[in-house]
Amino acid sequence: MKKFGLATQIFIALILGIGVGALVYGNDTAISYIQPIGDIFIHLIKMIVMPIVISALIVAVAGVGDMKKLGKLGGKTLLYFEIITTLALGIGLLAANLFHPGKGVDMNHLQKGDISAYQQTAEATQQGGFAETIVHIFPKNVFESMSQGDLLPIIFFSVLFGLGVAAIGEKGKPVLGFFEGVLEAMFWVTNQVMKTAPIGVFALIAVTVAKFGVGTLLPLGKLVLAVYVTVVFFAIVILGINAKMTGTNIFTLIKILKEELILSFTTASSEAVLPNIMKKMEQLGCPKAIVSFVIPTGYTFNLTGSAIYQALAALFVAQMYNVKMSFMEQITLLFVLMLTSKGMAGVPGASFVVVLATLGSMGLPIEGIALIAGIDRILDMVRSSVNVLGNSLAAITMAKWEGEFDQDKAQRYIDSIKESKAA
Image 1 (cartoon, helix red, strand yellow):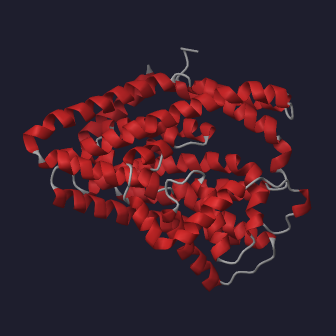
Image 2 (image 1 turned 90 degrees about the horizontal axis):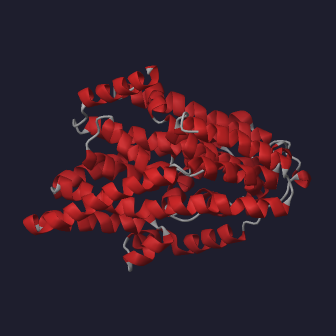
Image 3 (image 1 turned 135 degrees about the vertical axis):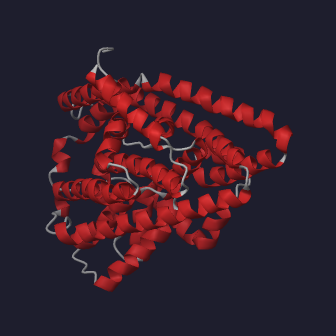
């Protein structure tokens, strides 16, 4: 296996996983043996995310030091995220009107998934309202937020702590040194975890195929096709135009992130590659302070793949139940999705919860989402990949916007990749 790169190993594991999954389809005993392997890999991924996000943000903010400069960077970053995610939502709605994925779906032949846990979360969040969402940003117990994997309060705490480290001057240098050490150590840990990625991918894909089989896709094939085509269109055309405006080629970026895109696709988790894309964007000429701030923040505010899915899924349910939505109702749906997607940031199964909350607030039948629960992982795979691509491009965009992008360093890195491939 050492002759092959990680991307090739993961691809082989994906094919083998599909084959084994098809062989043991419906065999609960076989699934019970394979599933723990995939679960262990996902646990390892989740284990490394929090220490990296916290240390990266503290190092970034303390490195910037100047509150005014940080506020300017933060404001520009959030503005960029809002524009790009609104575009993604709009394209998702447009695709739903072009493809009509919910039209003619026979609901009697669809297996209902259990969405009770997501429903409770959606209801609890809706009852809290916008004020509760704002209150939630401020952690009452930072360790509780860490244990729950709740990114919004963690980002707030890390930024504030980083400012504190910068404010105390010389006394803060040992603290900054400590978190720089934590960050480097966690990158080393990530490299070790990534060596097990092919095994984890094999198990995750095998279990997915063994549980649901290819037959599950057939009645909902139109929705799967609509999501995949729209996400790929968004990645190549919209992100491609964005990249062109910043003097970057989207296909070059895809080649650089090949391993990370395949890994996030096969694991259906963008968290799996967070440390790797941060390291690669630094090597590509983005300053460490910008990368360490923009990418972790983007994991909460810049999930374009998820936004496309949310818009398509909401209209899919409406079409399935023959609910005709006017242009103005769809514009209202877009604004509701903008609000609910920010409110659910950091919530487990966020995309599913967003759609549930949106359906409820728009008066659409929430049980409709249960009919696509079985294929949610298939849809999650492609939206995770575009989330990774979008956040990597965001780091480049912000570095160029701030006038701090190192073009020479970027060119050297691209040339080194070409040379290693030629060798």
